[in-house]
Image (tube, rainbow, N blue to C red; front, side):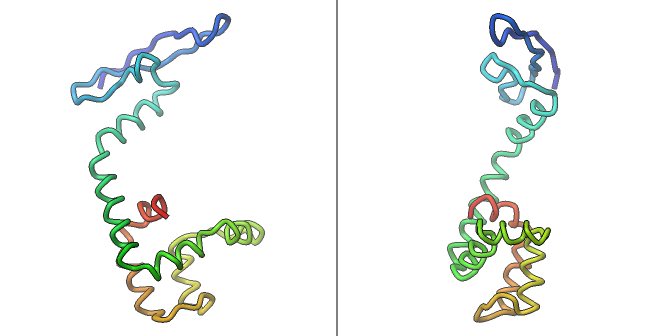
Length: 135
């Protein structure tokens, strides 16, 4: 990927340096002529472009997992709810899948099949980021 810079006039008084890329994989490195504000944003956009098929597949798998496990979907919605986030922030705790598993093992959350639920959540570890995006 060849990266070039240009000064773009953002309004009549200011100009900004913008980054453009030349690629041969179909990526819009010009961002419709406007460019990117930083090299990091350009590289991030290129990474998402190259991995969009994989990301869509993971999102589809996450939706399928949640659809086939409605009790886990409800549990995750409750655990990652806004109210629980506020409570966790007050106590300086971080909400995560590992934290949920720990709380399930400690008996802080009531679920019918505790061990089976924990097992399903642990087995879906490769989907955790996609599940957070979907719920």
